[in-house]
Amino acid sequence: MHGPRVLSTVTDIDTHRIGTQFSARGSRFAVDLDPFLNMDLFEITGPTFAPHPHAGFSAATYMFDDSVTRLHNRDSLGDKSLIEPGGLHWTVAASGIVHDEVVEETGRLGHGVQIFVRLPESAEENDPYGMHFTPSDLPSGELAAGVTLRVVAGEAFGMRSPVREAAESHVYDLLLRPGARVEIPVDPGFRGFAMTVRGSGRIATPTGRGEIGPVGLAVFEQGEGAVEIEAGEQGAQFLFGAGRPLRTPAYMYGGFCMSSQSRVVDAVERYQSGAMHGLLTAP
Image (cartoon, rainbow, N blue to C red; front, top):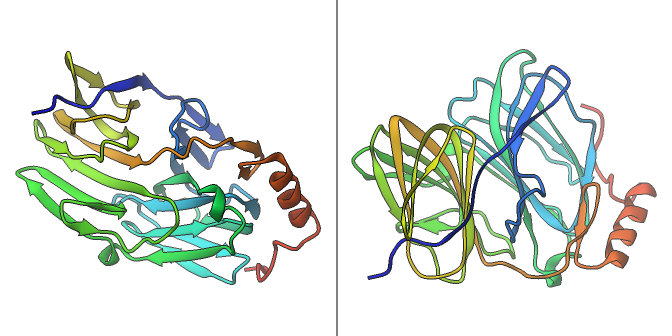
């Protein structure tokens, strides 16, 4: 028998705001989460960002079930779709894409998460593509009394997400009733995180149980053992991610992240020349 997975970080994370219509709580580049670049838990009630580029990684937007409006997604591939509560749009930006996302109804709350996942070096310059999924497309189930899990990406407990991309990453939406407990098996070669969406709980460590608070983030490392999470007395919801670290250089400039500076420069030049804008048109 193996003990619980070793944690390298248990911390609280800050909320940042842009204007009056957008706030996000995330670990953007503050904690090493390879292969994840960042996760931002966001609340949005109106237009915030102009169309903007991404290249070299995947940008996924998942809406939580308690969101009271949908999110419009538009991109340079010609997609115009609505991400509904419990739904997902996963963009493999690769060589480059331009997109924007706005709430369907200004003044109503859109609650979700945007996740950036690095691509292997061999896939960074591939053609971009997007995948759109409704809540019914993403498998979910009750694992035990008081524990429900939706597989946003990857697989868990015999359930497999339809997301397909070069990166080997797993993302789950985990809901626990008060006092409920779950052990999530993780490949020994993976590292990842558990991030509090609401509520609070405890996460097992080799020496006991550490608190993961209402704005908490726990990072676990490669090694043996499952990740064990228990909800507090008010219950909890966690975003859970795991993946195989790439251990490749990360050269970043704005919305670009590539494994070499020359690739970043090339992506920036293509964006500035208009080559990435493709089919993105006015709403």
